[in-house]
Length: 86
Image (cartoon, rainbow, N blue to C red; front, side):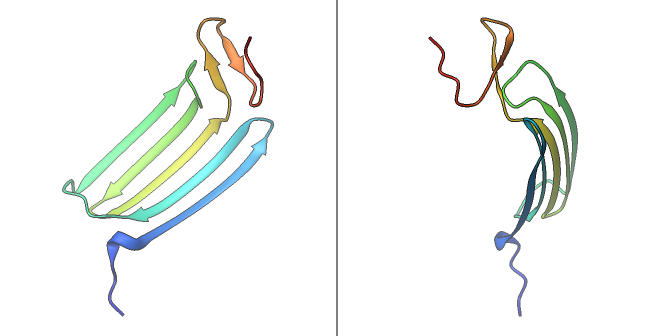
């Protein structure tokens, strides 16, 4: 059996509580960069939260802990999913 890095992907996603979600992604795809690392903490944007990415050659690992709501910059608050703005 030959390993094909273009077809490997695994995602684990769960609602932790309220609007908070946890996602863990493992995948592989061809990349010209042998190493990549990033940490992000985002606030007052759509789907704010923590993101961690690590890539080694064609293996990619990502953890996200985020809020599912969207940010309303005009009113400086989150909009609950399913809410219709007037």
